Image (tube, rainbow, N blue to C red; front, side):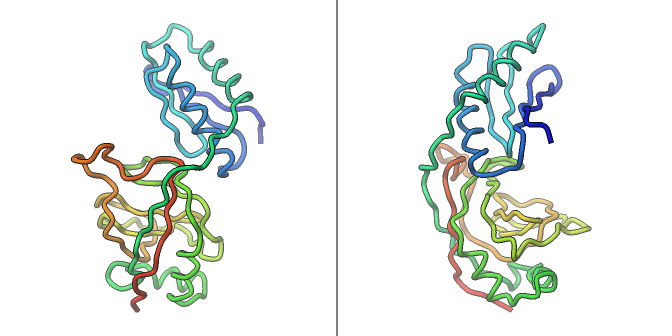
Length: 218
């Protein structure tokens, strides 16, 4: 794998900066720092951190995007990671039952009991790596590999907001109803996106989530 960042155009309005290497907390902290720095550049309209990448929109479509690409590469080499100093939000979760319809699939894959899965899932503090997919959704890092479970072969057409799910080596909470290919193991009543709130998203990159076991249902 190359140690150099990869850059590519997104149509005529944006540039995607992809960092080299694995998606780790250290890499994400550098991504946050790069997005913050690039957002202040006059040629940039917006800089949005993603999972191991930054989308940079153009203030005006350039004739030549090479100078901005070079500036991003130089900034990446010099950037210092942002500290992890956001808020930590605790989410009570009911594991299993009607709100966790795929708990049985995770049990079958891991050979663990629902209680063990809940305990392992609720043990870490999960840093918010990025916000995306749909408004308010948080990409989290730090899930224990013992409960990693492959994504579903056939996606579910609709899961409710607040659905707590596992997809491969990641876990997350749905911020609104919609389709999903992940395994839903529980639910929380926390609202992650509210247009009447400022900002409307509950969490930002650098914040953290702790899951608290409210109940485990079979």
